[in-house]
Image (cartoon, rainbow, N blue to C red; front, side, top):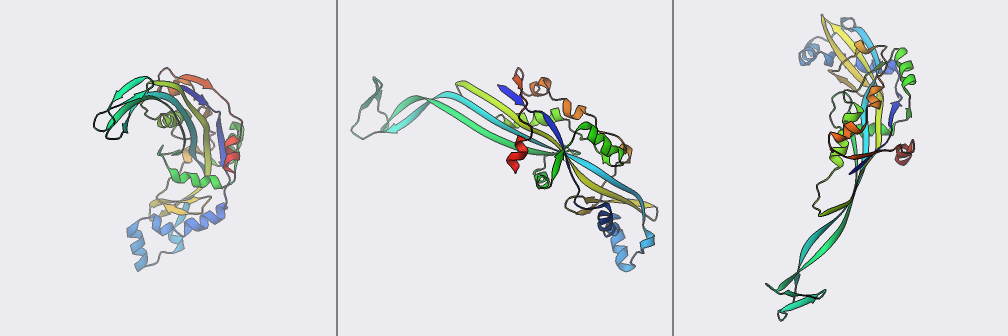
Length: 280
């Protein structure tokens, strides 16, 4: 088997709403953030604005992976086909060989030439490592490729850059394993898996932590859809820290050999931006 790898790329999706707008949406959900009991109490006595304090505001870029792999497998196998014949037939000569009739049919053996092609596109949540097909919806928003120094500059501006829990090598290993199908073959004449896209996307998220009666809760706002949700997290410890480039540069033979021992790896750099153009 041959595995071809593309180069890794990083994209930033720019926010569609401002921090002020996000804070307004979060403020509307502040009571919900403190749980059902707090919400129930609010029905009896509506809480005052001064009962809540914003103790932390966060702008962050949250990661997810997109990976695309195509596969080609060509092989040959011997198969026997039952062929029905007329009631009066006692034998049929095929290729100089007489085939006997049994049960109203003959058995013809032939060599099948087969070819299977496939494509697999997967999305991994950068924080939980879980497969999430719904992340594909974020590709509709404008994004731009960024380099490591640009990410460092973004982090220096006070934007929290959250590193992905899953490294590029883990993502590639999983997608390659999923692209390998089970076949029944006597001889394999071609077997190729081409990883066409290994992309780390950063999407904007706003987070606001509120304090009420010595308790704290977080509301997150999606910087693209504007959706506000409770029970979120903040990442103060990552403030000012840039992404470690190793998350993008650790793909190599060792990563794929964990799945396919002895695979013949051909490191291939595809034309930059080819997948982005296809999506458009």
